[in-house]
Amino acid sequence: LAKQSGMDSDALKTLIDEGDAAALLMSDYQKAAELNIKGSPSWIMNNGRQELFGNVGYRILRANIKEVLSKPGYEASWC
Image (cartoon, rainbow, N blue to C red; front, side):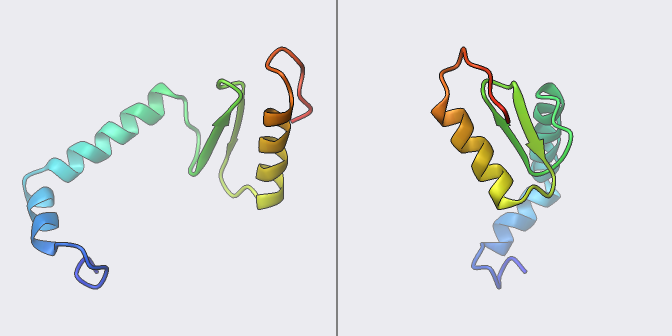
């Protein structure tokens, strides 16, 4: 798959064999835990006050982003 995608499969194999790939994955898991991420993909907006995760439709995501961008930070948002 790596070769078919145009990636350097030897470099990828080295990352896997030497444990670097697993270390990077664990780093991502640790960061997700620190941010209290509950699912993937996750959208964190409005300085962390708003979170969408999982299979969120485009219209819902768009409405939330539009609302966050149109309101000053001190005003309540309907999203």
